[in-house]
Image (cartoon, rainbow, N blue to C red; front, top):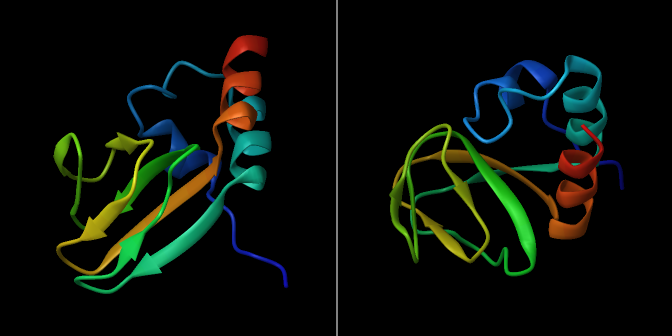
Length: 97
């Protein structure tokens, strides 16, 4: 099953990723899996790098809004859209930029 990815435009709004070149963001986005979460829905993201694209989620670090990043399980507080990939994939893109 093909999944929907994150766009370079969406990723450019993430603080940790804002300085990466557009081509790198595009390639990273293609490796990320987008998920729409309903309030109360939990996403197990342990071992992954995730970003909040819309809505609010709660993780171990507390409340996360659009632009926030996470590497643990999160629970949606509102309808939310997140995108994530394996942490090693994220690290390879950041290291090569």
